[in-house]
Image (cartoon, rainbow, N blue to C red):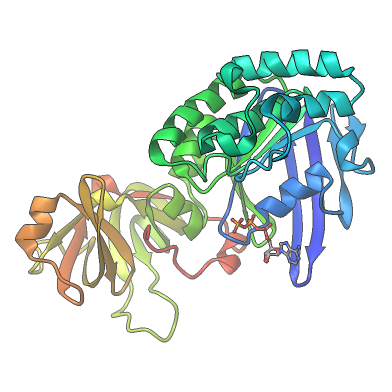
Length: 369
Ligand SMILES: Nc1ncnc2c1ncn2[C@@H]1O[C@H](COP(=O)(O)OP(=O)(O)OP(=O)(O)O)[C@@H](O)[C@H]1O
């Protein structure tokens, strides 16, 4: 069990978050660039001095110990293996530093390398490995010290798509057999959803949301989380089955508040979310639909997998996903005006806390980019 209150300061940045991770649990630590994720991991690992708080691992305070005496393993995006040592000695180094004899440390290292499919490569230098093999070796090195907490900072980021897929599976297998607490920093929703049972989201150094991946994806509380979950998200005010959505920040043309019909019966401040696949586009105003309809301007067009992601500006910003044939039929181009609409059954409204994240976020979440 890791129970940490992480407080650290750099120039104008302050991190202040509580993180608890149960033994055997994998938590994904998410947040936009500069949110403080790496700083949080570095404080836990003992690489950045905290300015307060505590770190308890299985009930023992470890925050005053130097990095090498903490029961913590780390895997970084760039594996950081010792270039002058072969792979076996890289992995044996940790156990040896912690008191094992050289022979014992090498025996343990050989078992970890075998386990991670690197048995045949143990005499190679890191420079002779592929990126994926190097990352496997880094994972073996961090597991070889039998840590109680494993920190993974974007471990799949340096890999190409195929290597990422196989490494994600290997990582999943090892994490499910790892009895300690694991924290994974990632910018990839797929990695987070595939590997973590719980998500912790930080923005500007503070925790903004935590929960299971499905809870967080269903009820995102900030624009960043909505984009991460692939949703359009807005703040609004509900009266029964109607939500009036606030426009974008002042200084831009709005055209008045938009009203959406929703299935839920709510009152007061709410979030309204819908996926880009639920947004239909049309060159003329759809008839008989006074609600859930608005006119926007195409400000981005991008092929994503099997669909075209259209970014719309207007009274609200939104993303729409169209099949390529539908996009071609509309003859979409940048700057073009189109009508957008969403079916009531595809919207999802839920209560928003007053204050809190609201002040931290733009007046609206906006659509996925
Ligand atoms: N050594 C440092 N000295 C001064 N400022 C720092 C230092 N390290 C990080 N920062 C600042 O602290 C803030 C948090 O940085 P951090 O790297 O922890 O964010 P992050 O969430 O990991 O971002 P990313 O996703 O881009 O890696 C940023 O504003 C960053 O510029």
